[in-house]
Image 1 (tube, rainbow, N blue to C red):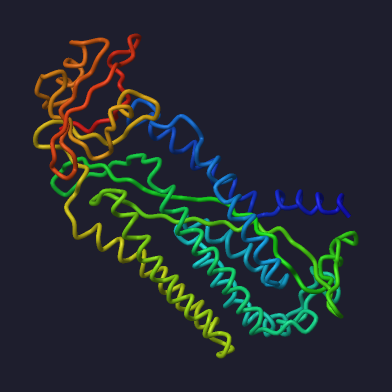
Image 2: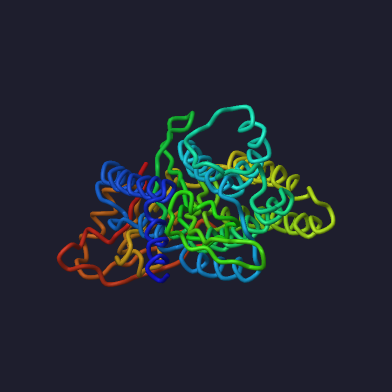
Length: 392
């Protein structure tokens, strides 16, 4: 039994969604590093943090969710699991923004409504005999299934809000675009992406049609199996007119409002059988509205990360460098360096060369406040304090 459990766990890593998601994370990481080296002459973040986030960010919530859903008893069906994996992989072709369960869980659940009619009118033969029973596995009703899926989605939505708020602004890598007036400005695509391993309860003996050794347990007259599902969670938005922390906070508030309404729908499904189905439609529309509201906020504000009228704009901070020790942040404007006024990049590096062991800066924050900051710098590389700048 223990051996079978570890085999089930190993199968988690060969599922299509996990593999495709890992490939996308690796590709994104190397593409970002190459872009930074090409545009900034140095990678702002040398580590492949996208891969680390993909593998580790969702582990804690995966354990919590698996325990809670198992104890409460929230089973799902195999047909939905297969649909979810197909929908998720297709969603990855449209970027990270539609990989969020808001879209993948909802679309998969809505597609499941029409699946019985489709299968009855076609001659699929690739599935094992007697594997599929339309919307019902051992008398597992459709409305109960959709309610369970909506509860799982509600949990994933809440955990994703927490993660987006905590992790989204940690690594900001600038991209460039030119305005209509020919100014070069920076923007920041924010693309949190991770896998959450979720242990799901599946009614019936369906897995034994594929694997005869798959463990099954019984409760009363019903049989159940466990299945590790890699739930991919992604989101994507661009910040160019707001402070990233403020933009993330506004987006999170919109998602929290969406979650509050979804919770009301989940409670109402106790008395209204098909409330969860309407809830899936609401969450798809709501998710699109959240992204649209963010886009409107960005569109109506002025560009924040363009060249400064006086000084040079900070568009990136390399970790574990003097710039980080001086608490410089993206959006700051360096006005003076070592008591010399700064107008362009050459001024900055000439001022740095005046003192090979110490750096003193006068900085204007995005709020317009002036502040002084200083620190020791690397003796072997006095011109590299770890700041990425946008000159005129």
